Image 1 (cartoon, rainbow, N blue to C red):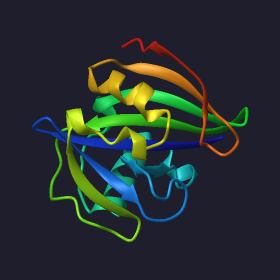
Image 2: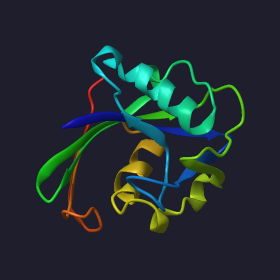
Image 3: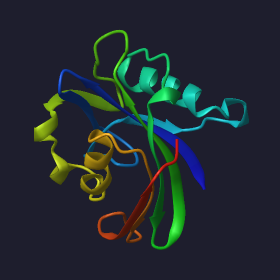
Image 4: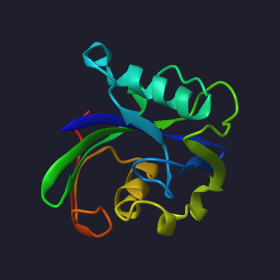
Length: 156
């Protein structure tokens, strides 16, 4: 199972989402993130920092203290990804378009869930409301249909 990160940037009751322009998730709004690159990058904090920089040109310093969810995604019953999700409130720079992502600011009450992964509308509002969760998301084999969503609150 691949392990990765996902960072949602928030400021003044607004969130930066980015349209995925290529690869897995193309055509969907999402946060910034990706897989741990290699064994040397075993720290999820480093992965979150690197991926956000590569996909937005933004510099975040501390993702770890903003961990809000650990989500395991399954596709057709098979484990696909274990993702560490962060809400990031402090960064340097302005989000810019890269070859992979095109950023856009949204008001927190205007998040385009209908243009995101179908399960995002289940777990993202929970963490935006302040919950820390551990979840399992079961998609059909193509990731188009949500079959099951289970979560529990994370212990501190």
